[in-house]
Length: 228
Image (cartoon, rainbow, N blue to C red; front, top):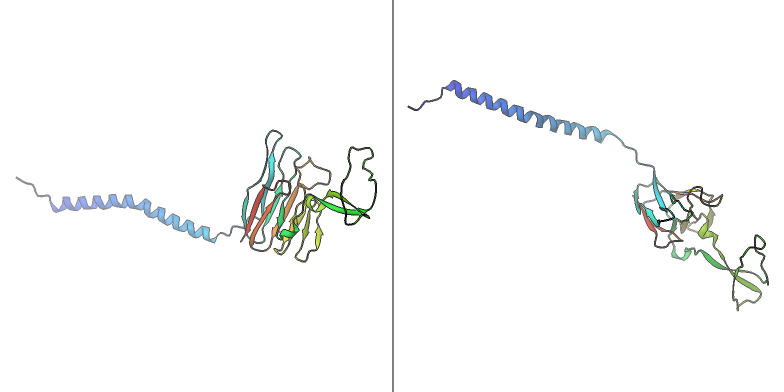
């Protein structure tokens, strides 16, 4: 004979089922509530942007030097700064050079005219050195020599009018975005270059845009700063 469950037993089973569901659902509800409150809390927190980003210019050692900018690509906001430094263990310099006008590209050496002379005195005396003298058929009264270009090896800026502004070692400069040429000069690792050599170069970017740069000594060494 088939037994029919009493209303009380059915009601008890329903209560047990409801209690089980409550136990399972409760943690999910609390988790969702916690996540919601957490997102609200984070949205109210104002996190200041990182003001200075650091970029390595070269690196490595005597066994394995490398010629790259690390990182190659930097994303910043206007008003932020980027500082380059040379972490190499050998005295291998690099430059951080921005060319906004291709006519302002600075070579490492350039020909210069000097008043006609038959001899040059080396410094220090007796050193094994001599200038490179080039033929100058157009003007026999002037001697053409090949000399090192200070605008490639020293820090300087050329503004939108072509005016040249010389910068001190380890300079900090605010980029307006209208410059024609910006150069760090030779960047040496700390303690491995000449006494007054630069070991850092810092630029504050005031205008949004994309700024490409490279190393004059190693033209394949390139980087980019994207300013929002």
